[in-house]
Length: 147
Image (cartoon, rainbow, N blue to C red; front, top):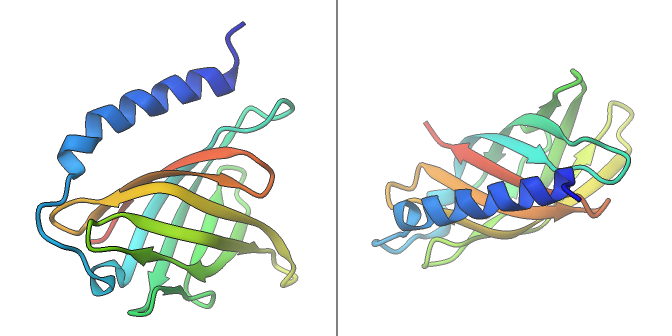
């Protein structure tokens, strides 16, 4: 039986196989390379009772990797906006990690957390691509650019 999750998993595999050589980083990365404003598009695969959804985000990351809650947010495909906070790190091999990126609703209640399981930055240090999972066990994939 073909499910949304199986189609997304196959698509994600093709995406990562296609982009991995392009995103291989020849120069070492530092935390400073991750700082700045990133524009991210993400797709959450969904669960058995959900078809999945898109979101677009603006992430403001400082030199220590903190995602600023006051200037970072995501707009979901249904028009709902959520603030974002958390910490993102990059290592010298240009691999990006985030143990918790929290989403906040209009009433300052934490609505969920996401984790980056695998992500990498390109050698120009202006594109990131990755996958992760959310607190609701939904897998997600994303692409971000830093102008």
